Length: 167
Image 1 (cartoon, helix red, strand yellow):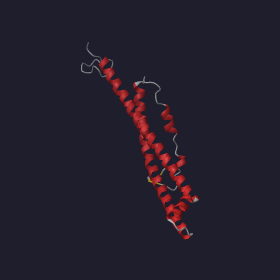
Image 2: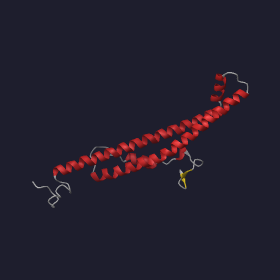
Image 3: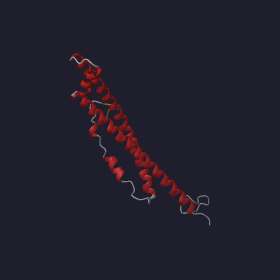
Image 4: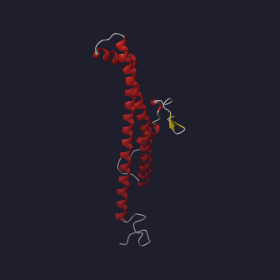
């Protein structure tokens, strides 16, 4: 959808057709309480990091798309401004009002607003997944520290080869 032969194909890109179901499903998997199994925390940490990476990939495409749409919007405003001059508008304010109220410019502005909003949405998703990944890593660290201090870790007593601490 986004890439063809490892190059971005802006012609076939549909900003409203980005599949976010995997992100929404992963967001729902966030634990409801703080009691998280260490295996689940490790799996979620990896999944959240992969989701953040995927959001980064999509963000780069969205930034490119947003820039293209913004350039088109600015070009449309300039063309309409010059058209207003040809149609007899004398003052700068009249030409500006004509160009910014024209139907084509309003459509271009709407397209730019949608591109901006979707980019912001993916920036927030990216931030959410990075924070969720960090949270899971902190849970893993605290769980490992707790296991080490209690002597019930698989690696707690490896210095004596028995897998348990000497009491």
